[in-house]
Image (cartoon, rainbow, N blue to C red; front, side, top):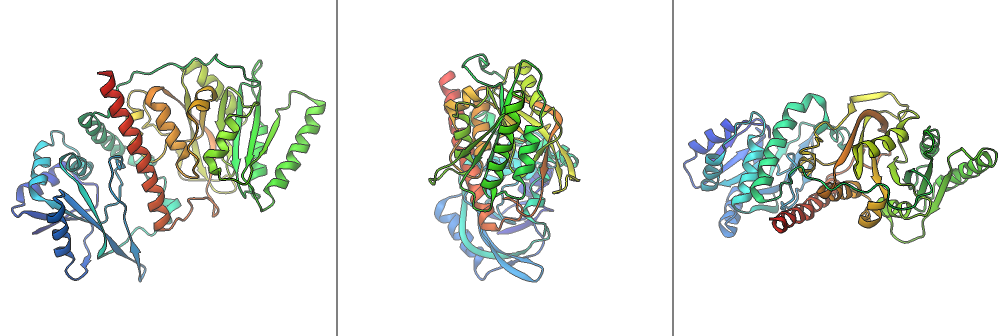
Amino acid sequence: MQTFYLAGRLCSTQAIQDIAQTANEKYVILCTKPHIQWVAFAQERMLQIMQDTGAVMAYADHFQQTGGQTIQAPVIDYQEGALRDDFDFGSVWMLRTDALKQAAAEMDKTYTYGGLYDLRLRLSRIGKLEHINEYLYYDIEEDTRKSGEKLFDYVDPKNRDVQIEMEAVVTEHLKAIGGYLAPRFKEPDLTEGNFTAEASVVIPCKNRVKTIETAIRSALGQKVKAPYTYNVIVVDDNSTDGTQETIQRLVDENAALRAQDKTVPELVYIAQDKTWHAIGGNWNMALHHEKCGRFAIQLDSDDTYHDETTVQQFIDAFHEQKCAMVVGSYCLTDFDGNMLPPGVIDHKEWTPDNGRNNALRINGLGAPRGFYTGLLRQLNFPTTKYGEDYAVGLRVSREYQIGRIYNVLYHCRRWEDNSDANCDIETMNRNNLYKDRIRTWELQARIRMNKEQQ
C-alpha cells in the first residue's frame, strides 16, 4: 500500500493523474494533511473494510488535535446528493488503485483547483464510497475559526476562480448521471389568485427579544409605489423571553397608526400553537394566511433590510423577470451594522443558464429570498428548523427560473446568538447530513424527470 500527500483539498488534475500513474500497488492512501498519526492497526482495518465491501474508496472518523486538546471528529455517510465540493471525508482517503487509474484516465478536462473534487465524483460513478464509523487516526486542525466564521468562505469573492472550476466539475458530473437540467423553464402566471396585498414581508421568530423590534421596524419602514401595497407578517413560535410582548406592543402601535392613516402597512401577528413548527412550519403558516401577499419576502428576525426600497425591488423583479422566486444580495455586518469580511455576498455563481445545477453543489441559495405565494402554497416548506429555505429553493428551481437582484438589499447580522454562530461537530454533521439528503431527493427527482421527458 502506497501513501501520497496532497497540499489540501484544492489540487490540480495533473497532480491526481501523476499519482495514478505512479501507483503500482492494489490500494493507495491519499492524505490531505501532512501530520497523520494512526491508531494501532488502523490501516489494516481500512484495508479489511475495502476488501470486504468492494468499495472504491474508504474514509473514517478520526481524532482532531487543536490547541493542545484532542476531540472526536466524526464524519458523515456519503450519499448520492453529497455533492458539496467541501464534503468532509477527513484527511485520509484509501482508494482502490484500479478505480483511481480509471478515474484519472477519464479526466478529459484540466483543473487547477478541482482535481480532487473531480476524482471523488468520478469514483462515486464507479463504485461505493464507504464511511468507516470508527476512530482510526489523529490529525491536526489548523483552521480554528468558529463555524459561523467559516460559513461564508465559499462565497468570498477572492475564491471566485475556485468556484468557477468547482461548478464546471459538478456540471459534468450531473450530465454523466442524468441529473443535469438544461436552461428551459416554466413561466408562472403571476396574475392568478386574489391577494389583498402585492407583497408580504415574512418574519418567523422564536426567542429573539434582542432583535425582533429592529427587524419589524425595518420591514414596516419600506416604501412601495402605487398601486402596490404590502404588509408584514410576523410568526412567533412560542417565545418565552419577552419576544411575544414586544410583538404585541408593536402590533398595538401599528393599529393606532393605521387608525389615522390607512396607507401605513399592516403588521399581522400569528402566534403558533404548541405543536412542532420550526422555521419551515412558521413560513407555511404565513403563506397560507388570508392576508399573505402575492409575493412573500424573507426577513430573518435578527436581520434588517438595507434601505426602504427592498420590497419594491422584489416586486419589480418578479414582474420584470417572470420568475417564481427571486434571490437578492446582502452584506455581512456586526450587530451594530458595521460591515464584516467578506462584505457583499451577491451569489454571482447563480447564473440564469446553470444556477439550478450549481445549486446542488453549494450549501445555500443566498438572501434575501422572495417567493411567488401561489406556487409556494402548493409546494410548502419542509417543517424543519434548518435547510428549509434551501429545500424549497431547489424544488422551485427544478421547473422555474429563479430571478436575481444584485443590489445589496439586506444586512445579515452576525452575533453570538446566530443559530450557526458556533456549532459543534455533531450539530454541523447533522445539518450537513440533512442538506445532503435534500440534495439526494432533488437529484433523484431531476433524474426521473429527465427520463420521463426523453
